[in-house]
Length: 525
Ligand SMILES: O=P(O)(O)OC[C@H]1O[C@H](OP(=O)(O)OP(=O)(O)O)[C@H](O)[C@@H]1O
Ligand SMILES: NC(=O)CC[C@H](N)C(=O)O
Ligand code: SF4
Ligand SMILES: [Mg+2]
Image (cartoon, rainbow, N blue to C red; front, side):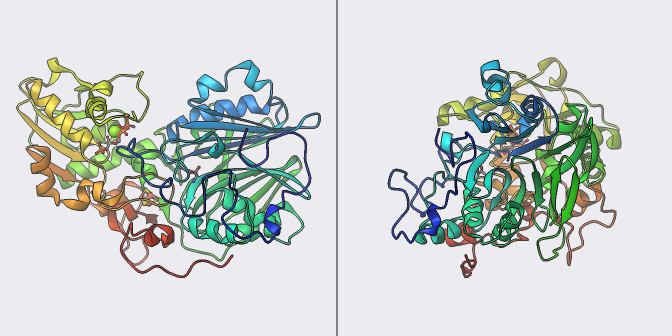
Protein backbone atom coordinates (compact mmCIF):
# COMPACT_ATOMS: atom_id res chain seq x y z
CA UNK A 1 0.00 0.00 0.00
CA UNK A 2 1.37 3.34 -0.88
CA UNK A 3 0.48 6.50 1.02
CA UNK A 4 2.29 7.92 3.96
CA UNK A 5 3.43 5.02 6.05
CA UNK A 6 1.94 1.61 5.60
CA UNK A 7 0.32 0.87 8.91
CA UNK A 8 1.80 -1.48 11.45
CA UNK A 9 3.23 -0.59 14.84
CA UNK A 10 4.71 2.81 15.53
CA UNK A 11 7.97 3.29 13.76
CA UNK A 12 10.64 5.93 14.18
CA UNK A 13 10.41 9.41 12.78
CA UNK A 14 9.39 9.78 9.14
CA UNK A 15 11.86 12.64 8.93
CA UNK A 16 12.84 12.65 5.20
CA UNK A 17 12.12 16.30 4.96
CA UNK A 18 14.84 17.31 7.37
CA UNK A 19 17.46 16.37 4.80
CA UNK A 20 18.65 18.94 2.33
CA UNK A 21 17.65 17.21 -0.87
CA UNK A 22 17.49 19.42 -3.91
CA UNK A 23 15.43 18.65 -6.95
CA UNK A 24 11.92 17.45 -7.33
CA UNK A 25 11.11 14.88 -4.71
CA UNK A 26 10.51 11.22 -5.14
CA UNK A 27 11.57 10.14 -8.62
CA UNK A 28 9.34 7.09 -8.38
CA UNK A 29 6.28 9.27 -8.27
CA UNK A 30 4.95 11.62 -10.79
CA UNK A 31 4.26 14.58 -8.53
CA UNK A 32 6.94 17.10 -9.01
CA UNK A 33 5.59 19.98 -7.04
CA UNK A 34 4.13 21.39 -10.22
CA UNK A 35 0.47 20.75 -9.89
CA UNK A 36 -0.47 20.42 -13.55
CA UNK A 37 -1.52 18.41 -15.36
CA UNK A 38 -2.66 15.87 -12.78
CA UNK A 39 -4.32 18.45 -10.61
CA UNK A 40 -6.32 19.69 -13.55
CA UNK A 41 -9.85 18.77 -14.39
CA UNK A 42 -10.32 15.37 -15.94
CA UNK A 43 -12.64 14.58 -18.83
CA UNK A 44 -14.79 12.72 -16.30
CA UNK A 45 -15.91 15.90 -14.55
CA UNK A 46 -19.52 16.93 -14.72
CA UNK A 47 -21.77 19.19 -12.66
CA UNK A 48 -21.03 19.53 -8.96
CA UNK A 49 -19.15 16.96 -7.04
CA UNK A 50 -19.35 16.47 -3.35
CA UNK A 51 -16.53 16.93 -0.94
CA UNK A 52 -15.40 14.61 1.79
CA UNK A 53 -16.78 13.11 4.96
CA UNK A 54 -14.76 12.53 8.12
CA UNK A 55 -15.65 10.39 11.12
CA UNK A 56 -13.73 9.50 14.28
CA UNK A 57 -14.60 7.40 17.34
CA UNK A 58 -12.72 7.06 20.60
CA UNK A 59 -13.65 4.65 23.37
CA UNK A 60 -15.85 1.95 21.84
CA UNK A 61 -14.88 -1.67 21.27
CA UNK A 62 -14.82 -2.52 17.54
CA UNK A 63 -14.49 1.19 16.79
CA UNK A 64 -13.93 0.52 13.07
CA UNK A 65 -17.41 -0.95 12.74
CA UNK A 66 -18.84 2.33 14.01
CA UNK A 67 -16.53 4.22 11.66
CA UNK A 68 -17.85 2.16 8.73
CA UNK A 69 -21.43 3.00 9.73
CA UNK A 70 -20.59 6.68 10.15
CA UNK A 71 -18.91 6.78 6.75
CA UNK A 72 -21.90 5.06 5.19
CA UNK A 73 -24.07 7.91 6.52
CA UNK A 74 -21.57 10.37 5.01
CA UNK A 75 -21.34 8.59 1.65
CA UNK A 76 -23.11 11.51 -0.07
CA UNK A 77 -20.01 13.64 0.67
CA UNK A 78 -17.71 11.51 -1.46
CA UNK A 79 -18.04 8.30 -3.40
CA UNK A 80 -14.64 7.82 -4.99
CA UNK A 81 -12.92 6.08 -2.13
CA UNK A 82 -12.94 5.49 1.60
CA UNK A 83 -10.46 4.55 4.29
CA UNK A 84 -10.44 3.59 7.95
CA UNK A 85 -7.55 3.65 10.44
CA UNK A 86 -7.43 2.14 13.92
CA UNK A 87 -4.92 1.62 16.68
CA UNK A 88 -4.74 -1.51 18.82
CA UNK A 89 -2.14 -2.37 21.49
CA UNK A 90 -1.38 -5.69 19.77
CA UNK A 91 -1.13 -4.51 16.17
CA UNK A 92 -0.32 -0.80 16.40
CA UNK A 93 -1.73 1.36 13.63
CA UNK A 94 -3.79 -0.28 10.92
CA UNK A 95 -5.18 1.40 7.81
CA UNK A 96 -7.38 0.00 5.07
CA UNK A 97 -8.08 2.12 2.01
CA UNK A 98 -10.43 1.14 -0.78
CA UNK A 99 -11.84 2.63 -3.95
CA UNK A 100 -15.62 2.71 -4.15
CA UNK A 101 -18.51 2.67 -1.75
CA UNK A 102 -18.23 2.09 1.99
CA UNK A 103 -21.06 -0.48 1.88
CA UNK A 104 -19.22 -2.62 -0.67
CA UNK A 105 -15.80 -2.59 0.96
CA UNK A 106 -16.09 -1.97 4.68
CA UNK A 107 -18.81 -4.53 5.35
CA UNK A 108 -16.44 -7.39 4.52
CA UNK A 109 -15.28 -9.22 7.64
CA UNK A 110 -11.82 -9.73 6.12
CA UNK A 111 -11.45 -5.94 5.93
CA UNK A 112 -12.98 -5.06 9.32
CA UNK A 113 -11.00 -7.85 11.02
CA UNK A 114 -7.81 -6.02 10.03
CA UNK A 115 -9.03 -2.95 11.90
CA UNK A 116 -9.15 -3.84 15.63
CA UNK A 117 -9.17 -1.28 18.43
CA UNK A 118 -11.16 1.21 20.47
CA UNK A 119 -10.07 4.22 18.44
CA UNK A 120 -10.81 4.67 14.75
CA UNK A 121 -10.74 7.34 12.08
CA UNK A 122 -12.49 7.22 8.71
CA UNK A 123 -12.72 9.26 5.54
CA UNK A 124 -14.87 9.13 2.44
CA UNK A 125 -13.42 11.02 -0.49
CA UNK A 126 -14.25 13.13 -3.44
CA UNK A 127 -10.90 14.53 -4.48
CA UNK A 128 -10.08 18.20 -4.85
CA UNK A 129 -6.39 17.57 -5.35
CA UNK A 130 -4.15 14.85 -6.71
CA UNK A 131 -5.89 12.75 -9.33
CA UNK A 132 -9.04 14.86 -9.36
CA UNK A 133 -12.13 12.85 -10.14
CA UNK A 134 -10.11 9.64 -10.21
CA UNK A 135 -8.79 8.98 -6.75
CA UNK A 136 -5.52 7.02 -6.83
CA UNK A 137 -4.94 4.46 -4.09
CA UNK A 138 -2.11 6.51 -2.71
CA UNK A 139 -4.36 9.55 -2.26
CA UNK A 140 -7.00 7.75 -0.18
CA UNK A 141 -7.27 8.99 3.38
CA UNK A 142 -6.69 8.67 6.29
CA UNK A 143 -3.04 9.44 5.62
CA UNK A 144 -0.62 8.10 8.20
CA UNK A 145 2.77 9.45 9.25
CA UNK A 146 5.33 8.28 11.78
CA UNK A 147 6.86 10.93 14.00
CA UNK A 148 9.49 10.48 16.72
CA UNK A 149 6.80 10.59 19.40
CA UNK A 150 4.49 8.13 17.61
CA UNK A 151 2.29 7.77 14.57
CA UNK A 152 -0.51 10.02 13.50
CA UNK A 153 -3.42 9.54 11.11
CA UNK A 154 -5.28 12.43 9.53
CA UNK A 155 -8.54 12.83 7.61
CA UNK A 156 -9.47 16.08 5.88
CA UNK A 157 -12.61 17.66 4.51
CA UNK A 158 -11.88 20.84 2.62
CA UNK A 159 -9.17 22.06 0.32
CA UNK A 160 -5.98 23.97 1.05
CA UNK A 161 -5.73 27.01 -1.18
CA UNK A 162 -1.94 27.29 -0.85
CA UNK A 163 -1.13 23.57 -1.13
CA UNK A 164 0.71 23.85 -4.47
CA UNK A 165 2.90 26.60 -3.10
CA UNK A 166 3.58 24.71 0.11
CA UNK A 167 4.29 21.50 -1.77
CA UNK A 168 6.80 23.18 -4.05
CA UNK A 169 8.59 24.77 -1.08
CA UNK A 170 8.59 21.56 0.93
CA UNK A 171 9.95 19.55 -1.97
CA UNK A 172 12.65 22.17 -2.50
CA UNK A 173 13.62 21.60 1.12
CA UNK A 174 13.77 17.84 0.84
CA UNK A 175 10.27 16.56 1.55
CA UNK A 176 9.34 13.41 -0.33
CA UNK A 177 5.64 13.44 -1.07
CA UNK A 178 3.93 10.10 -1.39
CA UNK A 179 0.53 11.26 -2.58
CA UNK A 180 -0.97 14.00 -4.71
CA UNK A 181 -3.21 15.08 -1.86
CA UNK A 182 -3.10 18.63 -0.51
CA UNK A 183 -3.63 17.13 2.95
CA UNK A 184 -0.14 15.61 2.89
CA UNK A 185 1.37 19.10 3.21
CA UNK A 186 0.06 19.18 6.78
CA UNK A 187 2.07 16.07 7.67
CA UNK A 188 5.30 17.47 6.21
CA UNK A 189 4.76 20.76 8.00
CA UNK A 190 4.20 18.81 11.24
CA UNK A 191 7.43 16.88 10.66
CA UNK A 192 9.29 20.18 10.33
CA UNK A 193 7.82 21.65 13.52
CA UNK A 194 10.17 21.72 16.49
CA UNK A 195 7.29 21.21 18.95
CA UNK A 196 7.38 18.15 21.17
CA UNK A 197 3.81 16.90 21.03
CA UNK A 198 1.58 15.93 18.12
CA UNK A 199 -1.14 18.50 18.93
CA UNK A 200 1.49 21.23 19.15
CA UNK A 201 3.06 20.15 15.87
CA UNK A 202 -0.37 20.19 14.32
CA UNK A 203 -1.01 23.72 15.56
CA UNK A 204 2.29 24.87 14.05
CA UNK A 205 1.45 23.22 10.73
CA UNK A 206 -2.08 24.53 10.53
CA UNK A 207 -0.93 28.10 11.08
CA UNK A 208 0.87 27.80 7.73
CA UNK A 209 -1.92 26.35 5.65
CA UNK A 210 -4.71 28.38 4.10
CA UNK A 211 -8.16 27.49 2.89
CA UNK A 212 -10.78 25.15 4.22
CA UNK A 213 -10.12 22.33 6.62
CA UNK A 214 -12.26 20.32 8.96
CA UNK A 215 -9.79 17.74 10.15
CA UNK A 216 -9.70 14.78 12.45
CA UNK A 217 -6.32 13.57 13.65
CA UNK A 218 -5.73 10.34 15.55
CA UNK A 219 -2.87 9.15 17.74
CA UNK A 220 -2.77 5.96 19.79
CA UNK A 221 -4.83 7.52 22.55
CA UNK A 222 -6.25 10.79 21.28
CA UNK A 223 -8.47 12.30 18.61
CA UNK A 224 -7.93 15.86 17.51
CA UNK A 225 -10.77 17.75 15.83
CA UNK A 226 -10.10 21.11 14.22
CA UNK A 227 -11.86 23.60 11.94
CA UNK A 228 -10.21 26.35 9.93
CA UNK A 229 -10.50 29.88 11.36
CA UNK A 230 -13.59 30.65 9.26
CA UNK A 231 -15.21 27.26 9.83
CA UNK A 232 -15.92 26.81 6.12
CA UNK A 233 -16.63 23.09 6.44
CA UNK A 234 -18.72 21.44 9.18
CA UNK A 235 -17.54 19.25 12.08
CA UNK A 236 -19.59 18.05 15.03
CA UNK A 237 -18.97 16.29 18.33
CA UNK A 238 -21.14 13.51 19.69
CA UNK A 239 -21.27 11.01 22.54
CA UNK A 240 -22.26 7.40 22.74
CA UNK A 241 -22.04 5.22 25.87
CA UNK A 242 -19.28 7.44 27.29
CA UNK A 243 -17.30 7.41 24.01
CA UNK A 244 -16.56 10.45 21.86
CA UNK A 245 -17.47 10.81 18.21
CA UNK A 246 -16.35 13.44 15.68
CA UNK A 247 -18.19 13.65 12.37
CA UNK A 248 -18.80 15.93 9.41
CA UNK A 249 -22.56 15.90 9.94
CA UNK A 250 -25.08 14.98 12.59
CA UNK A 251 -26.63 12.29 10.34
CA UNK A 252 -23.48 10.26 11.04
CA UNK A 253 -24.16 10.48 14.78
CA UNK A 254 -27.74 9.34 14.26
CA UNK A 255 -26.77 6.17 12.43
CA UNK A 256 -24.85 4.83 15.45
CA UNK A 257 -27.31 6.18 18.03
CA UNK A 258 -24.89 8.83 19.33
CA UNK A 259 -26.09 12.07 20.94
CA UNK A 260 -25.17 15.39 19.40
CA UNK A 261 -22.98 17.29 21.88
CA UNK A 262 -21.99 20.44 19.98
CA UNK A 263 -20.30 21.78 16.86
CA UNK A 264 -16.57 22.36 16.85
CA UNK A 265 -16.30 26.14 16.64
CA UNK A 266 -14.61 27.86 13.69
CA UNK A 267 -10.91 28.13 14.58
CA UNK A 268 -11.24 25.67 17.46
CA UNK A 269 -9.08 22.61 18.05
CA UNK A 270 -10.30 20.00 20.51
CA UNK A 271 -8.16 17.24 21.89
CA UNK A 272 -10.20 14.24 22.96
CA UNK A 273 -8.94 11.40 25.15
CA UNK A 274 -10.75 8.77 27.22
CA UNK A 275 -10.38 11.11 30.21
CA UNK A 276 -12.04 14.13 28.58
CA UNK A 277 -11.74 17.05 26.19
CA UNK A 278 -9.63 20.17 26.06
CA UNK A 279 -10.38 23.09 23.76
CA UNK A 280 -7.69 25.25 22.11
CA UNK A 281 -7.66 28.32 19.88
CA UNK A 282 -4.52 28.06 17.74
CA UNK A 283 -5.43 30.74 15.18
CA UNK A 284 -5.99 34.48 15.04
CA UNK A 285 -9.74 35.00 15.40
CA UNK A 286 -11.55 35.46 12.07
CA UNK A 287 -15.17 36.05 11.10
CA UNK A 288 -17.09 32.84 10.64
CA UNK A 289 -17.88 32.03 6.97
CA UNK A 290 -19.58 28.66 6.85
CA UNK A 291 -20.24 27.32 3.32
CA UNK A 292 -23.81 28.24 2.40
CA UNK A 293 -23.81 25.52 -0.27
CA UNK A 294 -23.84 22.96 2.55
CA UNK A 295 -27.41 24.12 3.19
CA UNK A 296 -28.26 24.26 -0.52
CA UNK A 297 -26.93 20.89 -1.65
CA UNK A 298 -24.03 19.13 0.05
CA UNK A 299 -25.25 18.21 3.49
CA UNK A 300 -27.90 15.61 4.06
CA UNK A 301 -31.37 17.07 4.69
CA UNK A 302 -31.62 15.14 7.98
CA UNK A 303 -28.50 16.87 9.37
CA UNK A 304 -28.59 19.90 11.67
CA UNK A 305 -26.12 22.73 11.09
CA UNK A 306 -25.83 25.89 13.18
CA UNK A 307 -28.99 24.93 15.05
CA UNK A 308 -30.92 24.75 11.77
CA UNK A 309 -32.26 21.65 10.07
CA UNK A 310 -30.83 21.40 6.56
CA UNK A 311 -34.22 20.17 5.33
CA UNK A 312 -35.96 23.21 6.84
CA UNK A 313 -33.42 25.62 5.30
CA UNK A 314 -34.06 24.03 1.88
CA UNK A 315 -37.83 24.18 2.34
CA UNK A 316 -37.54 27.85 3.30
CA UNK A 317 -35.45 28.57 0.21
CA UNK A 318 -38.43 27.22 -1.75
CA UNK A 319 -40.73 29.57 0.18
CA UNK A 320 -38.46 32.54 -0.62
CA UNK A 321 -38.32 31.49 -4.25
CA UNK A 322 -42.11 31.34 -4.52
CA UNK A 323 -42.30 34.87 -3.09
CA UNK A 324 -39.54 36.31 -5.26
CA UNK A 325 -40.35 34.48 -8.48
CA UNK A 326 -43.97 33.27 -8.58
CA UNK A 327 -45.20 31.25 -11.56
CA UNK A 328 -48.60 30.57 -13.12
CA UNK A 329 -48.64 26.79 -13.21
CA UNK A 330 -50.56 23.60 -12.46
CA UNK A 331 -47.85 21.54 -10.77
CA UNK A 332 -44.62 21.96 -8.82
CA UNK A 333 -42.19 19.08 -9.39
CA UNK A 334 -38.79 18.64 -7.77
CA UNK A 335 -35.74 17.43 -9.61
CA UNK A 336 -34.85 14.72 -7.14
CA UNK A 337 -33.24 14.28 -4.74
CA UNK A 338 -31.73 17.57 -3.83
CA UNK A 339 -34.50 19.76 -5.31
CA UNK A 340 -37.24 18.10 -3.24
CA UNK A 341 -37.41 20.14 0.01
CA UNK A 342 -37.29 23.45 -1.93
CA UNK A 343 -40.09 22.23 -4.22
CA UNK A 344 -42.19 21.40 -1.15
CA UNK A 345 -41.61 24.95 0.15
CA UNK A 346 -42.45 26.46 -3.24
CA UNK A 347 -45.67 24.46 -3.41
CA UNK A 348 -46.67 25.35 0.15
CA UNK A 349 -46.08 29.06 -0.39
CA UNK A 350 -47.62 29.28 -3.87
CA UNK A 351 -50.52 26.90 -3.30
CA UNK A 352 -49.62 25.08 -6.54
CA UNK A 353 -49.94 21.30 -6.00
CA UNK A 354 -46.72 19.34 -5.44
CA UNK A 355 -46.15 16.19 -7.49
CA UNK A 356 -43.31 13.77 -8.14
CA UNK A 357 -43.27 14.44 -11.87
CA UNK A 358 -39.68 13.22 -12.14
CA UNK A 359 -38.71 9.87 -10.74
CA UNK A 360 -35.20 8.98 -9.79
CA UNK A 361 -33.64 5.56 -10.30
CA UNK A 362 -32.44 4.64 -6.80
CA UNK A 363 -29.65 2.43 -8.15
CA UNK A 364 -27.69 5.32 -9.61
CA UNK A 365 -25.30 7.05 -7.23
CA UNK A 366 -25.63 10.67 -6.23
CA UNK A 367 -23.60 11.92 -9.13
CA UNK A 368 -23.20 9.68 -12.10
CA UNK A 369 -19.74 10.15 -13.54
CA UNK A 370 -19.85 9.37 -17.21
CA UNK A 371 -16.74 8.28 -19.09
CA UNK A 372 -17.64 9.65 -22.53
CA UNK A 373 -19.52 12.67 -23.81
CA UNK A 374 -22.10 10.39 -25.43
CA UNK A 375 -22.80 8.58 -22.19
CA UNK A 376 -22.63 11.85 -20.29
CA UNK A 377 -25.44 13.13 -22.49
CA UNK A 378 -27.45 10.05 -21.58
CA UNK A 379 -26.48 10.40 -17.92
CA UNK A 380 -29.49 12.38 -16.79
CA UNK A 381 -31.82 9.83 -18.40
CA UNK A 382 -30.09 6.98 -16.62
CA UNK A 383 -30.84 8.68 -13.36
CA UNK A 384 -34.11 10.56 -13.86
CA UNK A 385 -37.28 9.80 -15.80
CA UNK A 386 -40.50 11.73 -16.32
CA UNK A 387 -43.76 10.53 -14.85
CA UNK A 388 -45.73 11.06 -18.06
CA UNK A 389 -49.20 10.54 -16.61
CA UNK A 390 -48.62 13.44 -14.20
CA UNK A 391 -47.13 16.10 -16.46
CA UNK A 392 -48.98 15.61 -19.78
CA UNK A 393 -50.96 18.74 -20.66
CA UNK A 394 -49.75 20.62 -17.54
CA UNK A 395 -47.85 23.84 -16.92
CA UNK A 396 -45.02 22.57 -14.76
CA UNK A 397 -42.68 24.36 -12.35
CA UNK A 398 -39.47 22.37 -11.99
CA UNK A 399 -37.43 23.09 -8.88
CA UNK A 400 -33.75 22.18 -8.64
CA UNK A 401 -31.16 23.25 -6.10
CA UNK A 402 -28.61 24.58 -8.57
CA UNK A 403 -27.60 25.00 -12.19
CA UNK A 404 -23.93 24.33 -12.80
CA UNK A 405 -23.25 23.46 -16.43
CA UNK A 406 -26.93 23.28 -17.26
CA UNK A 407 -26.74 19.64 -18.36
CA UNK A 408 -29.43 18.47 -15.94
CA UNK A 409 -31.85 21.33 -16.63
CA UNK A 410 -31.60 21.05 -20.40
CA UNK A 411 -32.19 17.30 -20.48
CA UNK A 412 -35.03 17.45 -17.98
CA UNK A 413 -36.74 20.19 -19.92
CA UNK A 414 -36.56 18.09 -23.11
CA UNK A 415 -37.91 15.06 -21.29
CA UNK A 416 -40.78 16.97 -19.67
CA UNK A 417 -41.80 18.55 -22.97
CA UNK A 418 -41.54 15.21 -24.76
CA UNK A 419 -43.90 13.82 -22.12
CA UNK A 420 -46.52 16.36 -23.19
CA UNK A 421 -46.11 19.22 -20.69
CA UNK A 422 -47.55 22.54 -21.96
CA UNK A 423 -45.06 24.85 -20.28
CA UNK A 424 -41.85 24.39 -18.33
CA UNK A 425 -40.76 26.96 -15.72
CA UNK A 426 -37.50 26.47 -13.87
CA UNK A 427 -37.06 27.76 -10.32
CA UNK A 428 -33.60 27.34 -8.84
CA UNK A 429 -33.04 27.21 -5.07
CA UNK A 430 -29.69 29.02 -5.17
CA UNK A 431 -28.39 32.10 -6.98
CA UNK A 432 -26.59 31.55 -10.31
CA UNK A 433 -23.33 29.61 -9.77
CA UNK A 434 -20.84 31.98 -11.40
CA UNK A 435 -17.58 31.15 -9.67
CA UNK A 436 -15.63 27.98 -8.92
CA UNK A 437 -15.15 26.71 -5.40
CA UNK A 438 -11.62 26.23 -4.08
CA UNK A 439 -12.63 25.15 -0.59
CA UNK A 440 -13.41 21.48 -0.97
CA UNK A 441 -16.09 21.29 -3.63
CA UNK A 442 -15.03 20.26 -7.05
CA UNK A 443 -16.96 22.69 -9.23
CA UNK A 444 -15.91 22.80 -12.88
CA UNK A 445 -13.65 25.57 -14.15
CA UNK A 446 -15.32 28.94 -14.51
CA UNK A 447 -15.76 28.87 -18.26
CA UNK A 448 -17.86 25.72 -17.91
CA UNK A 449 -20.31 27.34 -15.51
CA UNK A 450 -23.38 28.37 -17.46
CA UNK A 451 -23.99 31.44 -15.29
CA UNK A 452 -20.42 32.66 -15.76
CA UNK A 453 -21.12 33.04 -19.48
CA UNK A 454 -24.78 34.09 -19.59
CA UNK A 455 -27.25 36.24 -17.73
CA UNK A 456 -30.61 34.88 -16.58
CA UNK A 457 -32.44 35.67 -19.84
CA UNK A 458 -29.68 34.13 -21.97
CA UNK A 459 -29.70 31.02 -19.81
CA UNK A 460 -33.48 30.71 -20.19
CA UNK A 461 -33.08 30.91 -23.99
CA UNK A 462 -30.17 28.47 -23.95
CA UNK A 463 -32.16 25.97 -21.89
CA UNK A 464 -35.27 26.57 -23.98
CA UNK A 465 -37.62 27.02 -21.01
CA UNK A 466 -40.65 29.27 -20.66
CA UNK A 467 -39.08 30.97 -17.65
CA UNK A 468 -36.03 30.59 -15.43
CA UNK A 469 -35.54 32.31 -12.07
CA UNK A 470 -33.04 31.93 -9.25
CA UNK A 471 -33.47 32.78 -5.58
CA UNK A 472 -31.61 35.97 -4.57
CA UNK A 473 -28.61 35.91 -2.24
CA UNK A 474 -30.72 37.78 0.34
CA UNK A 475 -33.49 35.21 -0.01
CA UNK A 476 -30.97 32.41 0.49
CA UNK A 477 -29.57 34.09 3.62
CA UNK A 478 -33.08 34.61 5.02
CA UNK A 479 -33.86 30.92 4.52
CA UNK A 480 -30.62 30.03 6.31
CA UNK A 481 -31.58 31.94 9.43
CA UNK A 482 -30.36 35.50 8.66
CA UNK A 483 -33.63 37.43 8.86
CA UNK A 484 -32.03 40.61 7.49
CA UNK A 485 -30.58 38.90 4.44
CA UNK A 486 -26.94 39.20 3.45
CA UNK A 487 -24.93 41.84 5.31
CA UNK A 488 -22.70 43.06 2.50
CA UNK A 489 -20.05 44.44 4.82
CA UNK A 490 -19.81 41.24 6.87
CA UNK A 491 -21.49 38.26 5.20
CA UNK A 492 -22.05 35.38 7.62
CA UNK A 493 -21.49 32.64 5.07
CA UNK A 494 -19.05 31.84 2.33
CA UNK A 495 -21.08 32.41 -0.82
CA UNK A 496 -18.16 32.86 -3.22
CA UNK A 497 -19.55 30.55 -5.89
CA UNK A 498 -22.45 33.00 -6.24
CA UNK A 499 -20.80 36.31 -5.36
CA UNK A 500 -17.12 35.88 -6.25
CA UNK A 501 -16.36 37.16 -2.72
CA UNK A 502 -13.71 34.64 -1.69
CA UNK A 503 -13.14 34.80 2.08
CA UNK A 504 -9.68 33.19 1.76
CA UNK A 505 -7.54 34.18 -1.19
CA UNK A 506 -7.36 31.17 -3.55
CA UNK A 507 -3.62 31.61 -4.16
CA UNK A 508 -2.97 28.43 -6.10
CA UNK A 509 -5.97 28.97 -8.36
CA UNK A 510 -4.89 32.55 -8.99
CA UNK A 511 -1.41 31.42 -9.88
CA UNK A 512 -2.90 29.00 -12.41
CA UNK A 513 -5.02 31.79 -13.88
CA UNK A 514 -8.28 30.16 -12.79
CA UNK A 515 -9.52 33.45 -11.37
CA UNK A 516 -8.49 37.01 -12.13
CA UNK A 517 -6.18 39.01 -9.96
CA UNK A 518 -2.55 39.24 -8.95
CA UNK A 519 -0.55 36.30 -7.64
CA UNK A 520 0.20 37.12 -4.04
CA UNK A 521 3.38 36.17 -2.24
CA UNK A 522 3.54 32.54 -1.25
CA UNK A 523 2.91 31.82 2.41
CA UNK A 524 6.04 31.34 4.52
CA UNK A 525 7.10 27.75 5.10
O1 LIG B 1 -26.28 22.06 -14.19
P1 LIG B 1 -25.62 20.75 -14.01
O2 LIG B 1 -24.19 20.76 -14.44
O3 LIG B 1 -26.37 19.62 -14.57
O4 LIG B 1 -25.52 20.51 -12.42
C1 LIG B 1 -26.57 20.78 -11.53
C2 LIG B 1 -27.12 19.51 -10.99
O5 LIG B 1 -26.07 18.79 -10.31
C3 LIG B 1 -26.54 18.39 -9.04
O6 LIG B 1 -27.24 17.18 -9.15
P2 LIG B 1 -26.55 15.78 -9.22
O7 LIG B 1 -27.16 15.04 -10.32
O8 LIG B 1 -25.07 15.91 -9.24
O9 LIG B 1 -26.89 15.10 -7.82
P3 LIG B 1 -28.28 14.93 -6.96
O10 LIG B 1 -28.88 13.66 -7.40
O11 LIG B 1 -27.80 14.86 -5.54
O12 LIG B 1 -29.17 16.10 -7.17
C4 LIG B 1 -27.52 19.48 -8.66
O13 LIG B 1 -28.48 18.96 -7.73
C5 LIG B 1 -28.19 19.82 -9.97
O14 LIG B 1 -29.30 18.99 -10.19
N1 LIG C 1 -13.36 17.13 -1.01
C1 LIG C 1 -12.57 17.14 0.02
O1 LIG C 1 -12.90 17.59 1.12
C2 LIG C 1 -11.22 16.62 -0.32
C3 LIG C 1 -10.22 16.59 0.81
C4 LIG C 1 -8.81 16.64 0.26
N2 LIG C 1 -8.55 17.98 -0.26
C5 LIG C 1 -8.59 15.59 -0.82
O2 LIG C 1 -8.51 15.93 -1.99
O3 LIG C 1 -8.55 14.42 -0.49
S1 SF4 D 1 -17.33 28.76 -2.85
FE1 SF4 D 1 -19.45 27.99 -2.68
S2 SF4 D 1 -19.28 25.79 -2.40
FE2 SF4 D 1 -17.27 26.68 -2.01
S3 SF4 D 1 -17.19 27.00 0.21
FE3 SF4 D 1 -17.91 28.91 -0.69
S4 SF4 D 1 -20.15 28.73 -0.73
FE4 SF4 D 1 -19.32 26.70 -0.37
MG1 LIG E 1 -29.46 17.36 -8.73
